[in-house]
Structure formats: C-alpha cells, structure tokens
Image (tube, rainbow over all chains, first blue to last red; front, side):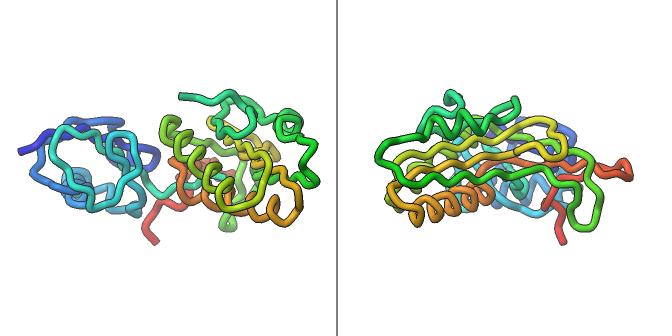
Length: 80
Length: 147
C-alpha cells in the first residue's frame, strides 16, 4: 500500500467534510484514487470529475502515482 | 508566490476591489495603438435564479502559476505589447468586477484576439470556484453537480 495526501476543494470539500486527508491506497493513477475515494465518500458521486494536480502541478488523470504524492482534486472550475 | 497586482505581464489574485485604472496605466506603451480591457461582472441572475452575491474560492499557488502560463501563451500566439490580468477571491457584491484582462498591442486585432483567448483559458483552466448565494437562502457551487 502507498500513502497519499489528498486535498479537497469547494464542492468536493463540502461533500467529504474535510480539507485534507492521509490515504492508504494501491491506486497507481489519480483516476483510480478518485474512484476509491468516491467509495469512501459517496457524496462525491453527486459532482462531476474535473481537474487534478499532483504536487502542485496540473496533471493528467492517468499520471503514474508512486506513493508519497500530494494529490489535489478540483471540482469543475468556474472562474471569470 | 503572489505577483504584485497590475505589474505588467503578471497574473494576480486579489482579495480587494479591482482597480481598472491601475491596470490600464500599467499597460500603456508608446508603441501600442490599441488597448482592450475585458471585465467580468457579478450579475443578479443565473439559470433562472436570483443571485444576491457570490464568493470565489481560489487555490492561489496553482491559479497564479497557471494564470501566468496563459499570459505567456498569449504573448507567443499574438502580436501584443503588454498584458496583465487579475481575478478576485472572497465575497463579491452585485456589479463588482470579478476579473480584469487587459491587453495592449500595436493593432486592435491582436489585442481583441489575445484578450478573448486569455479570458476563455482562465475560465477553463484556473482552480477557481464560484459559490452563488440565492434569494431563497440556498447557496450552490456553480457547474459542479452532475447533470
């Protein structure tokens, strides 16, 4: 199992009830990690999946996760 | 890292009311014959609901770096002189500007095109979220729910 720091923003933070959590997971991509987190926090399913960042850089959903990363899940953005 | 607001060539996030005169002054340039400014305002309705005020949440470290990347892309794609943009965070009232994008260029075509490019990319890519406060007391994060 790998260890990740997951951060939640805006609607996702409301859905999970936390800003940040330490997660044990075997997921090797943000997409798999998000799917796992949705089982842990079923309220997440109400919201669309949008953007993800790994270690403070925008990332693709299939970016390889090796463990130890900080993974930031962003709900659909609405600036402007 | 937070850029000083309205320093030419920078993207900034601000918790204070946006100053369009300062932004315009920072883009003035004797080689430029055109200046285009886009302002996004807080309006009183969305999807048929009456909006009283709204709140922007910003993840500032990435919003600033991604915002600066967008300004750099605009400089590469269009023949412009100077460019700056600033986005609000926090609680905003009706009529307040939420975002300013300013571009100066030798000719108007490039200034309009670059300004349009920047605001479209800002809306699609920056980690910024909008929570609307409605007249019926409900609040909602915009665009977030699965349709």
